Length: 492
Image (cartoon, rainbow, N blue to C red; front, side, top):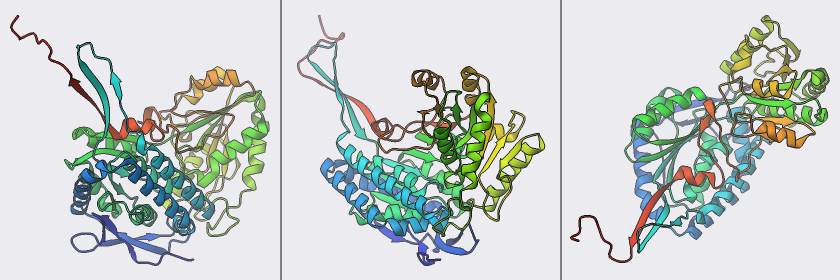
């Protein structure tokens, strides 16, 4: 297997690539399919995290004052470099996360689009004139960059989510610290490198990698540092709660995009071939390791058997195995712990009466696409996010019951509804408790310009498009009193 050699991924602090302090400690990574060592990365300490925030703060004055045209040009150049390096970056995704090569290339394409969208937003830091009741007063709501933004990115869609963590904040004039996932430090390092090589000023972009056992200390330092102004985190709801609690103690604003248990509702009048295609893609793409993955198929009882058979046929046609093979569609789970947890969820469901219509047992480090029927609220799989290639069928007797089941979860990220009656589906969509809902399409979708985020335990705040302006700028009231005014304390 080709690798980006075993030289460590270094830290990027203040424009310099460097080893971890004080002794250059590193940690190793393994290839999820074979367990072989495929890379090393700097094992940062609190000292490194602090230095990264301070470097970003030192660069803020210059970068926030840079002309929008300069920020746009540099982010556009970074997008060009990312596309030029697409195959190298995609190969790193394969090695570090076990995703197939096409998944890596998809990551790069969407991430490059995010950089271009961010570049386009360089002129969006605008305000408004607000009418005042005070004679002679010009009052304005002014948007300004907020300062140092810490982005904490996950491993599952590493190029997309690592880029999303920093691109828009940079466009608005903030400086950033990207805290890489312990599972894909070299992939996240590629993002920092394209921004660095594009010519962003020293300290504008900083990269921290850390060993798993140091994660809590490093994250605590990044959040608690008095110069940090914003934190964005994408990951599990469990860790998101910890991030929110830490940020709350320090009165730091945080954007959280967390877990999901996405329902795909299929009504009696739906086009079943379209629904089967969308459900198969949504549930099994990248082994179901996507926050938007379709986990629950909420289907009208009258068409459930027909739909299930169509999905079984599609699922069984997906090649499972080594992600380095061009024909592989389903690669390994990220690690053995994830594989074991998925097996436990399936075993629990089957023990309580569920039926695995296809799949259901591990295949080496992989878990084949699995469709289960007979799912009830008593089973763990009904409520727990699997983050694996598991799709549960829950049969219902009416659209109202479908909405009730769809909302019967702590999560609320993505959802979908299939029906030939689009106005009726739109009415149902407005009743679904989710940040995202698609009609006659899959739950797994992203576009750089769209407001992306969830509700309930799926987090709060929005990435993407103009919605991000609220997250990564300060709105200030600035006024000019153009002529003398009378104050209540003035002599009569």
